[in-house]
Length: 494
Ligand code: GLN
Image (cartoon, helix red, strand yellow):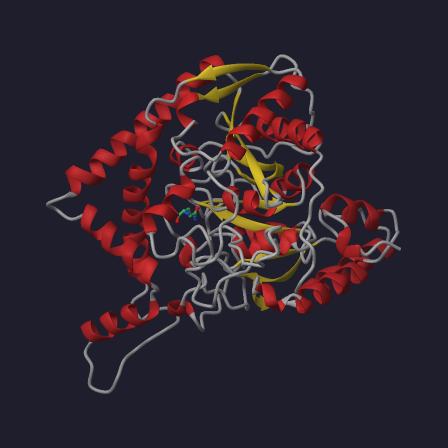
């Protein structure tokens, strides 16, 4: 029999339904793979019993002849940004150490209702701030990938959903949740040779997801291929009264709607994404992607998104501004850490708890955010950034007159080595150059593996779609996936 951990979500689901194996066998195989992969540091908490309980429920239901749930027999990893009832949820921050939620996030609850089980909570950049997983309080995740230069430099799995990307790429979880504020699903997916989609803002409820920048945060799936992402996404989305920004719309059947034929579709190539200093390999991959979508029947058109160059600076004002407000709640009173020495007053407790509990990157964002929201600088920075955000959204609206989806690279480079960019925040922020504009506009966007670079490391292509057109995004990604034939996977060293 094939190793069950070699199977993705669709194959696990279908194999379980067909009686080829039990859900308990699947959960047991993945639990063992998780336990054997501790050198990756992908999981902060392992929850084998959760996975087994869901599996046993699925096996019992199958034996009773009940109609199978959509994800029966499928265990997944859960990014630690999602609050999970009775299971420690820290957003990889010291300040939330010891916090065990009394409630379940809407997205995780939907996945459990669909029959999935949880393998554990996945490591990430602290409060989802970062692009390399190095800001986690609990140590960075290491990518399962290695460069083919024999140097064995440990590589970044991308961020902030780097535990998710590593776990899926290393085949220790068939799928995982991620969240994306400015690229945190797409960039780690690109770095590790897997697929990931951020749906339209409002498709997934943010209730119970630890907040970073509320006007940008969206959950989404990370999995081995486009179909697996479609299956997971269907079981994560849907209206939720507990989130005021949740969209009250039916969830389409994206898996059933998958169609890799792009005849009659126009694929836009934004000329402003051809940034200075882009490595030739990324440029070549992009051209390859253009040829693939043409081969699938699409017409390719050049489009202009003139305000692209202002997206990154606007994002790094808006996201910290919202973060500084959202993170004000961590004061030593309500959650997690409290530093209150004998005789200290309330002010001292706030200051000590926050000084000790937040990591450097989180503090940097709180400082920037507080500054741009302060009375003297609000108009100069925050109002200005909001205007830029509106212009970026307008750029996309104009582009949709000429095309149905956009095709771009996902990230400006392949995975870099751990430590390579951690001393230079600007270099780190530049990772988000291709992912941030669609986040600011709230658009669905996906990364799909396109090939490898000279070092054998994965490179991703990004598809951006119109609001609510996840189907168009998935279909274009599928057309690329079929032509890319991406089969590379990391050699096991852990
Ligand atoms: N890397 C980006 C940041 O640090 C995006 C993070 C995210 O999408 N959560 O803000």
